[in-house]
Amino acid sequence: MITLENSKLIVTAKEVGAELTRIYDKEHQRECLWNGNPEFWRQQAPTLFPVVGRCKNYEYRYKGQTYHMGQHGFVREATFEVESQSAEQVVFVYRANEETRKDYPFEFTFKITYTLKDDAVETAYTVINESNSEPMYFSIGGHPGFLFDGPIGEQILTFSEKENIDRVLLSPAMQFSRDVEKDYVKNGEPIALYEGIFVNDALVFHGFKSNKIGLLNHKTGRGVEMDLTGFPYVGIWAADKVGCPYACIEPWFGLADYDDFEGELPEKDGIEKLEASGVFNCAFTVKVL
Image (cartoon, rainbow, N blue to C red; front, top):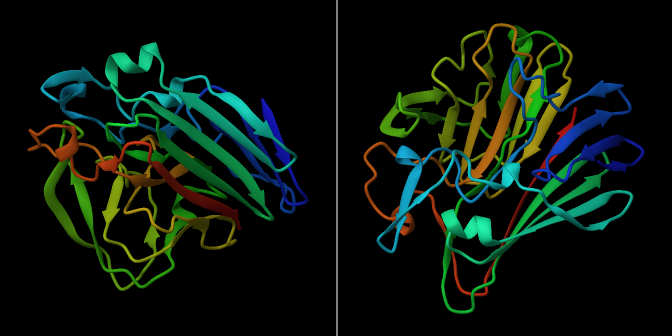
């Protein structure tokens, strides 16, 4: 287990999945990251790569060949190496290998860097295409869960800009539908959480203007705020179980297949194309409130 600490936070992470396991707010003596209780959800903050969500029938096609791909990809179960570590930063690295090539025919290096920045922790992703002749295609995203400060009925989602956005809907097969729920967010009003809000799975948004989304108790003001500048999609999710005490804010480059998608991987909605020898970088930051 890796521990990072400054005057405001204690953050821990493990080599499996390079997954965060703790964000502790020293000032308010509060655990902020979901604890992984399997009664609700066994993970805490997995990374989604090289796909986000579910491919149709758990498979995709590339250059005429069909490959298997589990939901959210494979790195969340992979063991990373620690490339470097200091008191307030750790860099994890994972590389393409014999096992990954069976289901994902690309040569890559993937790095996850956690950096403490005062009362916030930054998660940075770096994808390197190690091929000098072929592009690679991927999606990537975060899936951190955050403990509520108080009951679900006191929690709200806030947006840093005045939003009027539709909700992208999921089909029963957990693929995206071309249908939307119009004006799910109106006039920049916060979304009030309640028991049953996730009965139809995640709240997914595209085309939002906000760089920051907060999850907080409207009475105490305690919670977290995520800066996801540059991410084109975001999902808000928790297990649809009575008494569930957390929710996830998931910034994505990419998304699950649409239910009418029949193309190859390069044609997938939201897919990222990284040219030969190219480098892709993105990051989001979680600030405790």
